[in-house]
Length: 214
Ligand code: AP5
Ligand code: ZN
Image (cartoon, rainbow, N blue to C red):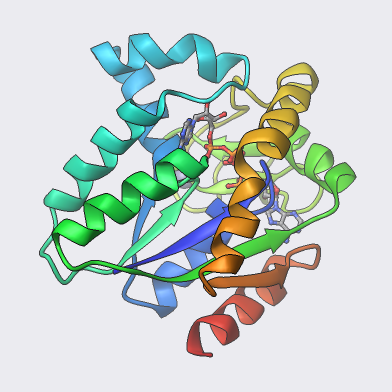
């Protein structure tokens, strides 16, 4: 089974996933992280997706569904997944249903992180990520103790290639046209829980845990 973290770019999906991992049995699966790893390693998939990621467009549904299928198959059939950044189109959501119908899997909750668009831009432009452990910081909202250095392991903090203002605008547009329709899709299936994610991360995590127990 699985839960889905839905929300615009920078809504705090990755940050929330880090906390939920500590309090729930869900295995964190981020398609964005998987694709960035592929780009770093220079694999064929990485070469294929780099250009579209760099300008904020989506990778193809087929490629993403293939990645997810393979990732699911690496865990026991009763594993519980937390999908972050997937599904991102209606096509992907339907593909997930098909994948799950083959293994008796089901999506139990969709947490829709609701944040004002202006705040999204501010969050993305100030984000810094650790090169070694992937920990997420923000220069203003969640500053590391020492500038440019990860609190957890001393790793170097970097700015994602797609976190510049121009690409951020494209990502917001792509979200509106291709991903936001999933809100209706999952409302109709009775799975959607809106979470006010405009507050500090602890509050978002608390509200999310409450929604999961509901
Ligand atoms: P992906 O990596 O999924 O990017 P995204 O959806 O744009 O989301 P982000 O990772 O940017 O943000 P987030 O919501 O995780 O926020 P975070 O917690 O980091 O995808 C990247 C690209 O890969 C896509 O553009 C596409 O090309 C491709 N791709 C990925 N999946 C795909 C798919 N399924 N299909 C097709 N293509 C796909 O927080 C952001 C910042 O805000 C941080 O600095 C954080 O410290 C700060 N922050 C977090 N929470 C708070 C808070 N409560 N208050 C204040 N600041 C906060
Ligand atoms: Zn680190």
